[in-house]
Length: 132
Image (cartoon, rainbow, N blue to C red; front, side):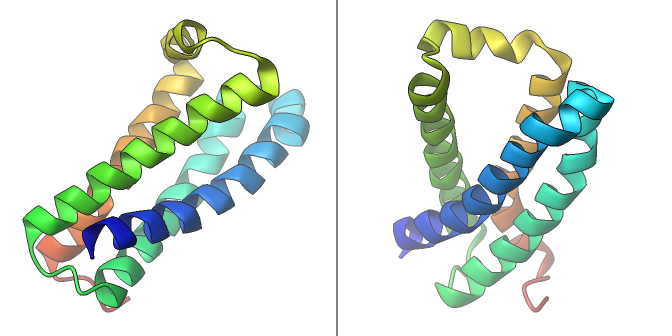
């Protein structure tokens, strides 16, 4: 059940992130800068992660903190794999270059939010806040 929950959680958040990331990259970043555009996007993604984590733990009956951590960890792994795959396919970036990109402030902010995404299911189960 945890794997299914992780795939579902990842898919919902990744789909939104793909759309918002495209808008951020093509429209918002040229207008206000990459870091500012990332800062605009992050609260939306974290709110979506909060909602999707609550949905996933309810839908797949994730009741323990350990299962919620596993859900988040697996979803994070899927997210990083998808990010690397997109970097390779869309901009021919090597894994080394992809990792090196995390030196930039906007990428560090994004990574912090992605870690938040990974922890969100645990937070939802831990706090008992899975009704919203």
